[in-house]
Image (cartoon, rainbow, N blue to C red; front, side):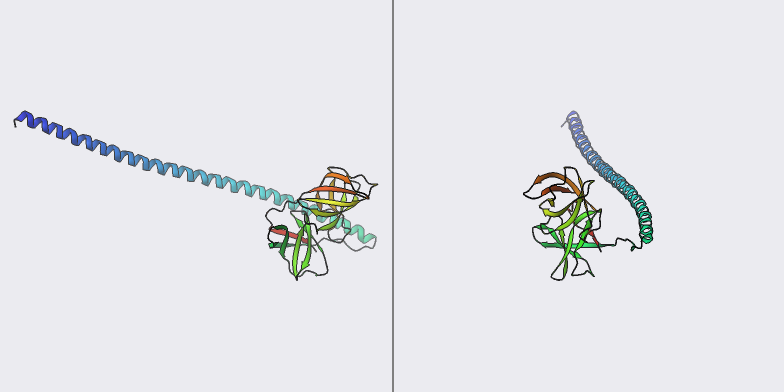
Length: 247
C-alpha cells in the first residue's frame, strides 16, 4: 500500500470519527436542551399555579373579610333595633323580644335517594316541639324528632309545612314542600297574590319568627276554594353542611 492510499484511508477514518463524534455531541446537546426546556416548562407551570393559588386565596380572603364586615354591620344594626324594640315593649309592660338560634351539623341523609331528609347533630332538643331550620339566612325547612333523633325535613319535602306571608299586604298562607319548589296553599280567594311577590315566614306557627325570607312567587293558580302559589325558594341546599335551628 503506497503512502497516498494510506493517507487517503487515514483521512476517511478521521472524517468518519469526526462525523460520529459531532452527531454524538448534537445528540448530547439535544438531550441537554430538552432537559433544560422541561425544567423551564415545569418550573413555569409550577410558578403559574402558585401565583394562581395565591391570587385565588387573596381574593377569597378579601371576599370573606367583606362578608365579615357586612355581618358585623348587620349585627350592630340588629342589636340597635332589638334594643329599641325591647325599650318600647318595656314601656307597654310586655316581655322583651329575643331570637335564639343554634348551629347544627348535618350527619347524613335519612334514606338513600331522598335528599330532603337529613339526620342532624342536635343535642338537647325538645321532643314535643317542631323547630324552624335556616340555611345561609333563609328558611330551609323544619326539624322534627324520629326514633329519638333530630330529623330535618327540608322545605321541599311534602311533610314540611310552616306559615308564611306574601307580598307587601302580608297575605297569609301555609307553605308545603313540592319537589324542587314550594307551594303556598289555602290563600284566601279575596286576596291578590301575584308573581314576584316575596314570601317570608309569618311566625304565627311558633316554628319560625316573622321575617325569614323563603323565596319568590313564580305563578298563582286557583283551586276550588283557595289560591295556590308556586314559590322558587332562596335556599339551595346542594351539599348540606351546617344549619341553624331556631330555638
